[in-house]
Amino acid sequence: MSIIETINTKNPFFGRNVVFTGELSSLGRKEAMQQVVNLGGFIKSGVSSKSNHLVVGIQDKVLVAKKD
Image 1 (cartoon, rainbow, N blue to C red):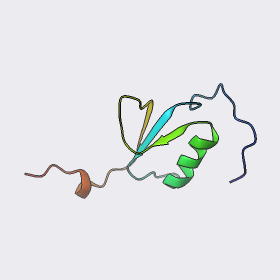
Image 2 (tube, rainbow, N blue to C red):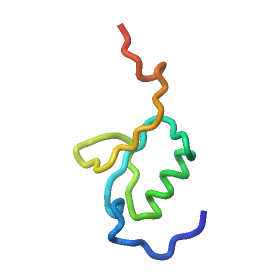
Image 3 (tube, rainbow, N blue to C red):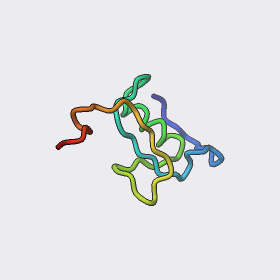
């Protein structure tokens, strides 16, 4: 991936907090996260009241399944 020298401040991700969850099907999570950063966004580790975007991938049912 190339180095970004200028960031488009009109981009929808500029200055926004983004959280990723699940496995992405079209590209790796690190690549997707880097693209958000290249667009001026911030990656967060969990959802909070400050989250602006939640990117939901394929969930591992073993990790998120309801336990009785």
